[in-house]
Image (cartoon, rainbow, N blue to C red; front, side):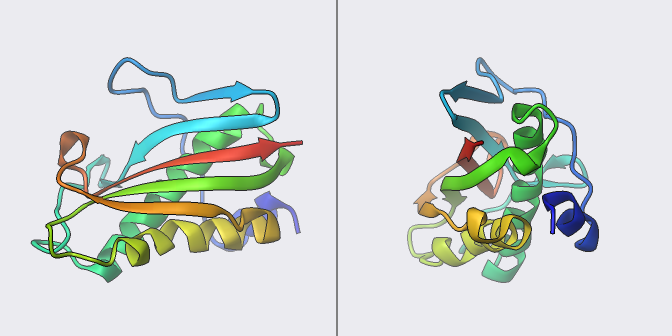
Length: 152
């Protein structure tokens, strides 16, 4: 099954590349690797502002991270010249989770993105990962995720 068949089956429409909010580009390619800048969680088109351990829980956070993965795939599609079937492997995901000092489920929040990437890309979507708890994320967003992929 192609990546696009899987996206259709999951009823996912990829968004266009977001305009950067600061002095950076959405992605950079070197050789066969493409590095995607961090994408923040959004709700109703605006930054999804919340802090884990204070006003958002793990299950809702998984949905936020899943949404970030959809945005990342939109940017990755642009980096692939419009063809996600060129993705040979999702290499690495790094997740920053806006959380209080006593919140310890950053890895579970990040599963929302990791699980979706595995569903869409199959074995090529299984990746190395880091998930960090941080005191704050730009614009007060609850989650920010960046991604590295290998292209064919």
